[in-house]
View 1 (cartoon, rainbow, N blue to C red):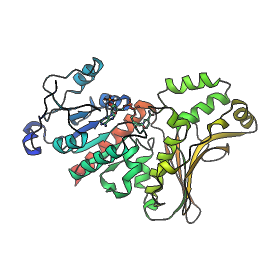
View 2: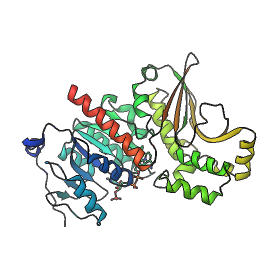
View 3: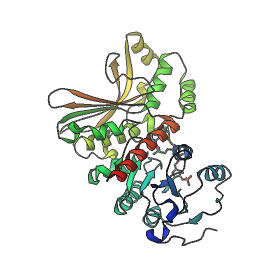
View 4: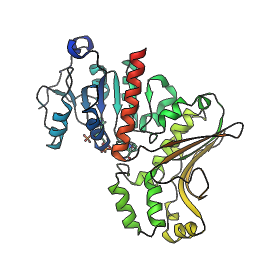
Length: 341
Ligand SMILES: NC(=O)c1ccc[n+]([C@@H]2O[C@H](COP(=O)([O-])OP(=O)(O)OC[C@H]3O[C@@H](n4cnc5c(N)ncnc54)[C@H](OP(=O)(O)O)[C@@H]3O)[C@@H](O)[C@H]2O)c1
């Protein structure tokens, strides 16, 4: 049984021997979260808590990451020295009071309100927030302080450059186009090269590219969430992901994809929104010369400005390990920013 109340106040919790190290609270130790934990083994951070859907493991001195990874491989047992609490994640965030909260929970249709509540709790405690999950940013990022925000992983490794692009925050963007779903791009590439749909699906799965529910890739929901995040960052309103119609994936028919390829064209799942317009996602035929006709090891965010110029941001942090690397890059940057402030 877990102990019900194990948290001290933040001041009580901080032990003298490691207060100089930035503390991290991981929410969602699934595939991406576990990959991030593996990267933390060699990083100079103090992992003070890990929260999954049932409980929070907590040790203010710092959890032993290697031990934690081994114990998770053995059916969620509890590392010695750590304490657990079965309390809501947002309450755990308050009680732990880490410097940086990392959200690696799924980006599904359910649990969005809870994801927003966790983010709100994190910002209220003064923490910075790093997101692999797209749920909370797509729902609420327009209300957040961008200085304490990490979206690199949620944007496939392009998030740091997008957040740093001053033209986007200056209200000059008139259109956003996103090819953000590497799963469908890679699927299409395999089909174009002669694979059957089953072979293509298996290869995308083996590369760790699918969302926890692969229907979110093919329906365009993953792209819709990324488009909404990009639209909000670019000042193109706050579209509701639920109002964006699903993409018609019946157009992914092998003969059509190969016929386009023989003509020197290709197909990509594209999310678009124009200033004053509505957001939509669809599988589009693209010329191979299009900036959006990127290969499956990339995602692309194209922001068209009011003078016709295009700011193109590419990301290449894909799959579980790549996404974890993008999370770590954000954690490093936010920790350095905090240290410098
Ligand atoms: N795969 C990629 O290439 C990629 C790329 C970019 C972003 N992402 C994003 O990364 C995120 C994680 O993906 P994944 O494949 O690692 O998912 P996953 O394996 O399904 O892991 C999800 C984790 O979240 C935990 N969780 C669920 N509900 C929770 C709650 N209410 N409070 C706290 N923890 C909760 C789960 O805990 P339990 O184990 O207890 O259920 C699990 O540890 C997703 O949002 C995905 O969109 C993935």
